[in-house]
Image (cartoon, rainbow, N blue to C red; front, side, top):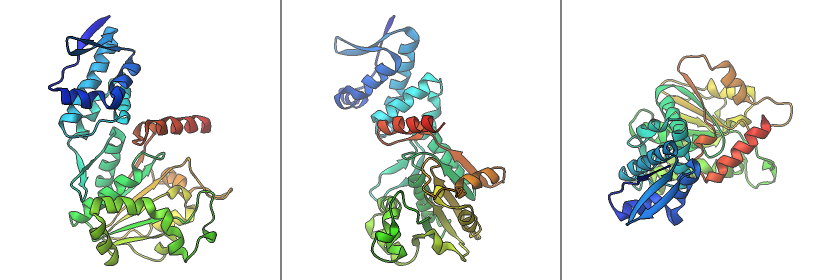
Length: 316
């Protein structure tokens, strides 16, 4: 058994490192079966030599995130612990200074997991990208961030967001209004992400001028989408015919991102998910990127990771 010091430059840094009610350091200790020892105003980790080294590696990486201005929460702590256990902790170094986009309030949006970074790189590289994974992995949010960045860089002239009008156990017919008004509540995550990144005023003006278009998938039929960044959200609820129709709308100077969660298909029984079919037959085509995110990439409450994993285990 060994004891090794936790090096910090200030009490403020130590407080951020340990987290609210010491939840961060408690998570590190639980992950590696080590203990925190306080002596002469100095914090140390005590336990088996290998475990202490892995735990300290996580602590040092957390210090690097704090120094770079990033937030350190329990989700990030748990993620770093998992990487340290598999000796892949250095993979997160590229996450610290890689900013996807700056929000209207000056907040930098960064990837929080290695899987998210690969997803962002695929979107930048390919004309068509499929992002498949469970809730909370940032599929839609990061796609919107890349779309906003592409517009700001004048790579595209407009942003088009769409999704199929298939509801999770509810009936659109009971909602008031026409199809556009009925589907608006289902597009709320897209609205929220755009408003955060652009600001309400800019978002409203771009929407009014047609630079941003948000519409049900049915409205895409017969169109050619040129010089646009097009995002199809909740694509697991498309049929084979619908996703084929969507993909063949691709015009010159455009990019497409298709996101979905194959564990949340709300199609009637007997219908095959168009997303599932598409990633199967398009996986070997050049300039089409496909990534499968998993529970490790969930950046919501840590409990969401456990819920996702439990459902995936049950499905298998």
